[in-house]
Structures are given as C-alpha cells and as structure tokens.
Image (tube, rainbow, N blue to C red):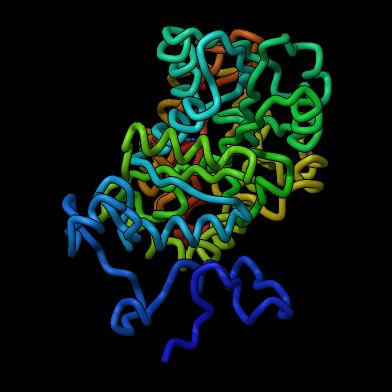
Length: 402
Ligand SMILES: Cc1ncc(COP(=O)(O)O)c(C=O)c1O
C-alpha cells in the first residue's frame, strides 16, 4: 500500500543509489501506512501515554512513553532532519535560541573553556556571557576569519568551538573544515549555527561539525508563523545531546512541529527562489553609487567567496549592505520609505525585510568599522523588479538626508 521509501531505509534498499536531498525533503520521516494512508503525520497532542498492563508500564519499552519524550509528530521531523543532515540523531526544541542553549549545555561543564566567533548571533553571546559564565564556563571570542590559527587560542580546558557561517549581520565566512581539524586534533567538539545555509546548502556533519543547530523558525517554516529549533549530532555527540534533552524536556509544541514538517517539504524550491532573488538584489545594490559594500558571500567580490564556493552549494536570502558615509538618519529614512520590506528581525519567511544594525556596540575580539551605516536585508518571494522599484524609493528618501 505504501510506495514511498519509509523512515530510515534511505529508499530502494542498500544497493540503490542514495537519494538526493531534494527527494529526502519529500520522503523522509513520512510513514503513511502508520497514519491510515494519509500523506502527512497529523498533530499528536498529549501528555499521558497509557500502557496496557503494569508490567509494560514498569518496563517502559513502548515506542512512546511520555509526552515530553516524543510523539509520532515529533518523530517524523526528527527522522527527516536526521536523514537530511546525515546525523546520528536530532532533538526538537521550542526556538533557535533554545537549540543553541541545549547544544552548548549538552557538551560543556563547569571549568570548561569555549571558543565563540565575534560575529556570532548576538543572543548566543548573551547566553555565553550570562548563564554559561554563571555555571563556570569561560568564553573567549575569536576573529571569525581566523581559520586554522584558532590553534593559538586553545587552552588545556578548551572543550568546544562554536562556529556560525556566514556571521550574523556581518556575513564573514568561516573555514569550518580547518577549524574542525584543529579542534578534533585537541579532542574538542565543534558546534555550528547553520541556520543561514540549512543542510541543503551546507551539509554540516560532512564538513566536520559534531553538533549542528538550525533555527527552524526561519526557512523550515518559510512563513514566519512558528518558533522551533533543531539540533542534530553525529555519533560522537548524539548520546549526550539526547541526555541533555531528556533531562530538561525543552520540548517543541506539536503545532509548530507539524507546520515545520509542512514547510520542510517545500524548503528547497523556496530556498532556490530566495537565493536567486537575493543575488539579483545584491548585484543591483553593488552597482548603486550610495552603497560602499555588499556583504554577501556568493558575490564574486566578497572576501569570503572562495570559502563559500568550496564548502557551500548555495546561498539563502539574507545579506547586508554598508552605505557610503552618511548620517544614520539617512539610512533610517531609506528603510522607513520602503513599502514592500517589513522592519522586523526574524527572517526566512516569504516576505522581504530590512533592519539597520551596528556591530560596534558588542564586538570584543575584532573592530567593526564599516565606514557607513549598515542595513540587513531578507529577500522574500516577491517579484525582484517590484523590490528594486521599492528600493529606488528608499534611495530617493535617503538622498534627501545624506
Ligand atoms: C543565525 C540565527 N540563529 C539562531 C536564531 C534564533 O532563532 P529563534 O528566533 O527561533 O530563537 C536566529 C534568529 O534570528 C538567527 O538569526
């Protein structure tokens, strides 16, 4: 009855060619025969799981044992994400920041030292500087461009290296394989926030990452209507990651998981469209006299382009620009004049966004001196011509104040 390749067998038996990621997006984690033939796993809501006998209750060997530990809905997404990432296992948590938190808690203890790029998503920095510090973990921030020279920052107690490529807001590329080689030679664990690329454009575990984080809130949703985090781990780190999840029960809500499963099936077509439109808009910005630099690693002119080309298979819809020297109020007037770009932080949905930013306020290992006001854009699924016409309006407002 069920003709799709079911959970975990990769499809077609062991002698068949492995399925491509685009196919896995469609097939992974779906078992219609377990859902009366329905295509999608429905939303299972529940706390209590009933057992037929006391003996079975005491043994606790049922597939589902308690609401926080998993349901068929969460299992579908865990299986799909694990397969897509080439991981040993995945946990689902209520947000991207929760994913970063559980990933770090799973591999660190009091007395450990952690290395974190200066370009990291700012709330990750806050977590390191507050909660992790309180529990006795010391963080050193490093230049995201450091590559193999990160060896010089290792201490005898360095337990983990956090990475994120490209950098949040500022889009520096990191040499993940080089950093992973240095870390692994010292028995340290490599974590990566892979939200920008997703496993479709950067297969994290193949490139040396032990624990990969994805804010499912962004492209897995694609509609700005859910909050979710996925953490996948390789064999080395999976047991500890699952133990951290079980001991905290930071479990994701069933409706958000269902919506993420829905989004997952179309993630590749959306990402390809975001990529194409964002590159077109980035190139359009690069030709504007008001723009000093476009921070987008898939542009040939970007300093991180060679690394991006070597390690990534695509780019998503998020990038930044640096304007020529002008007052901040001119950049603000530019954004305020836009009608198709929302002013909002969480990206990855179908809509375009623009926000001003300044990394100088929080960097500690590197100087942020771009020379002009900076704006981060998310390019949504609108028509590119309509977007550039809107941006023209923004530049007219900017010129009035520049
Ligand atoms: C790179 C990156 N990682 C993680 C997150 C956190 O995701 P969430 O909003 O689900 O906590 C964000 C959110 O903007 C992000 O940009």
